[in-house]
Image (cartoon, rainbow, N blue to C red):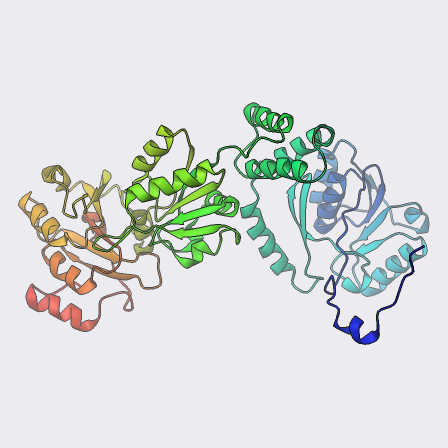
Length: 502
C-alpha cells in the first residue's frame, strides 16, 4: 500500500495553488422535474420563474396577487417540455418549502427576507432572496444561452452591470449555430467513443469538429464529413479554408459579430497594414499573425506572394483569415484572391466590413444619398495598378451633379481629379470634403470647394489613407474646431486660392 507523505512546511509554502480563491462555486444544477418555489408576483419573480421553468423545473408561484409579467408567463406556459408554471394565490407557509429543490423570494424588507431565509434553511432548501445578498445561499449569474452550451457570469453581487457587459461581449463571440453543433456532439458522442481510441485519435476528431463549429450551421454534408473522419481516424487533417474578413476603417467597434468570430477561429491571420492594433486584439491569442500590407508608394508584399501564402496555409489544414481594411469587396483586391483560391480548390468565405465611405459619412453626419441632393452614390478608385488614375474612367459620368462621388486612395492624384472634374463640367464651387485616417485616432478633415481640392490635399498630407467626397450632400458639412486643419495650413490654402468656407 502506498504511503502518503506530508510535505515539509517550507516546501508546501512555496507550492503554487492549483486554483486561486473563488468568491462563489460555479455549479450547473439539473432541475428537470424538480419542485421549485417562487414567492412573490413581481417582474423580478417572473424572470426568475421563467429561467427556472426553462431548466425543466416545476415552478410554483406563491403570491396573493401577481403582476402582468407573471400572469403572461403563466398563460404562455413553459417552453421546456419538463417545465411547468403554476400560480398559488395565497401567502407561503412552512409547508410550502417542504421537499422543494430551490426557493426564491422577492421580499419587501429585511425582516420578511430574514423570515423566509431562516425557514428555508430549516427546511434544507437552498434559498435566494432577490436583491438581498445577505439572504442568499446562491446567486443567479448573467447567462449566455446556447444550450446545451451555457455560460454564466458572476461578480459575486459586486457589479451586476459589469456582468451584463461581459455577457454582451461573450454573446458577440458565440454564434447562435453553436447550439446546433453542441446538440450534434451529443448525438454522435457515443458513436465516436466506439470508433476512436481514447487519446490522440479521439482528440484529433473533436478538434476538427470544433474547427467547423464556428463556421455556421451544421449541414448534411458537414455531418457526413465528420463521420467520414471518424471512419478514417488515421487520415491527415482535411484541407483548410480561407475567410476574407472586412476589418472596417479602423475602429474595432465597427467590426461585425461575424468578423470577430472569424478572428477567434483563425489559425493564421494575414492582415493589411491599415488594420488597427485594436482589431488584432480581438483575434485568438494562439493565431499566427503575418503583416502583408500593401501601401501605395511604399515597399510592400506582392499580391502573388499573398496568394501563395493563403494557398500554402490552407493546404496545411489551417483556417486562414485574410483580414482587409474596410470591406474586402470594395477596392480590396478580393476578386483576384477569390479567383486564385477557387482555381486551387480552396474553400473561400467572405465576411463584409464597413467600407471607409460609410464610416466617413457617419463621422460627418452626412447622408450620401440625401434625396434632395443625390439620386445615387458612386465609389471611384483614385489609384490604378500603375499608381495613376485609371484611363478608363468616364469623367463626364462622374461629373454628375445628381450623384455623390467618393474617391478612394486619391491622395496622390487629387490634383488630377480636380482638373478632370472641372474639365468635365463640374463647377469649381462644388462642395468637397477630404477625410484622412477615417475612424482612427489621427483622423483629419477638410471641407471646402472643388477649386481648393489640390491645395487642401497638400495641407492634409498623403501619408495616411485618404477619402475625397464630392457632391451637394457635403454643402452643409460643418466641422468642429478640433477637426479642421491647423490655422497655418488653412491660411496657406486661402492665400493660394480664395478664402476657405471654414
